[in-house]
Image (cartoon, rainbow, N blue to C red; front, top):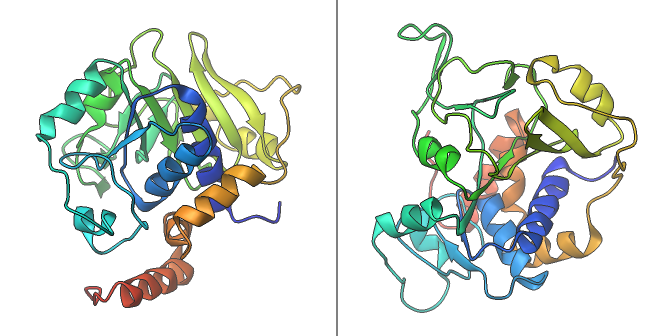
Amino acid sequence: MSAHVGDLLTAALAREIAESGISVYAVTSPASAAAALAARELGASELAIATGFTSLDAEPVPNVTLGEAGLFTTGAVLVDDPFDTFSLLARGRVGVAVAPAQLDAAGRTNLSGVGPPGRPKVALPGARGLPDNNASPSRVWYVLPAHSPRQLVERVGVVCGAVPPAGAIRRLLTPAGCFELRPGGWQALWLTPDGAELVAGAPGIGISVTGTEPVVTEPDTDALAAVRRADPHDVRLIEFSAGADAAARFQEAAAREGVSPRA
């Protein structure tokens, strides 16, 4: 597959948002901002964009250094009560994409630590919005830059987001493909050319592959074109890069945004 994994996953997320029927999408990262803006072009023209906590309905060029203020290129920032997004989330009106440190076979999520509780090998930021996200009937996408057995596990080390309620739609997007949580566990909806091998390399999460799934070799053309219009500087790719490549992309974005990154 020749496309960057960030293009594949952001375009796939954009198409998913556009076809989901949600009213509000809560942005959690530059890639999710690009996906939401692209979704408007792909048919969800009335989609409201919430920046997670305080501001609704933006028309941003996604950025990495300017925070919520950077989501607005013109006009005044529309500020709302931070609880409004979570109220809509609880009512099933919101969609959100998250990247937990661990996701398990039952759909539980972890962003607190990896290792024994109280003495983790890796300490992480904490639960943040994961408890509300997983407990809600709203649509949640888990978008991960790698299909890793360290992230996709049989059971998370710390439960931040509990098992989702019955009937809630939960989908996982990784370089292996798209997967949906069903009563019997995770089911593959489509795979990339390397998808079956990647799934086999992370057996803990228990993804079911029938062998009849469509194989996606390149990103959705229309969705990717819309994503690139929303994010012409490819800021979204930082989230899907690592090491020197990620550092170089961040430095480039910071220089363009006129902000010096912290050492």
